[in-house]
Image 1 (cartoon, one colour):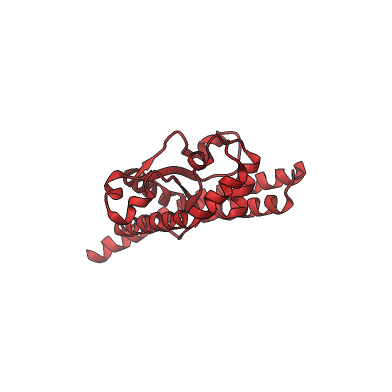
Image 2 (tube, helix red, strand yellow):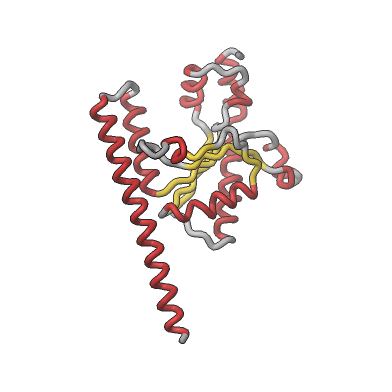
Length: 213
């Protein structure tokens, strides 16, 4: 593994490139979602900050961090309800070169008997047809991570991450359990919001048809 200082110096020189990558991918996704007429709440993108980068290479053993760290550029898409995730997943899978071995659906990881963090994670690169354009050529072979989750999943993940990060230790089991119980409640709420949303759409379609008659 390369010396940590050398790796950090490398990232300092390339940090803006990953910022550009993240922003370009975010813009592509937003344009495709809106062209398809799909609903979503918000998107954001970021390059990994130096502190997080330094902490990660200190914690984990990397043979070649430049190639192995797949989250130096990150894009997040937040939807209102779970049913809005599916068409966005289809857009990503059709328009980017997805690394299926490193991508995951955290819901599948939980199984049927546990609750906790839920989100869809893709690790991907730009496809060759886009890299043929001059403005994308310098982004060849660069990985980025895309996360898709609902507002409620996002709220839980952000609070859980923020508290754990600030505590920087192992939380007492009682508090961890409360987080898990809250995750279960939010999962039920997500499901109900999804069901209500579909019911409202059904009523809206019925009213529109009756109005046309």
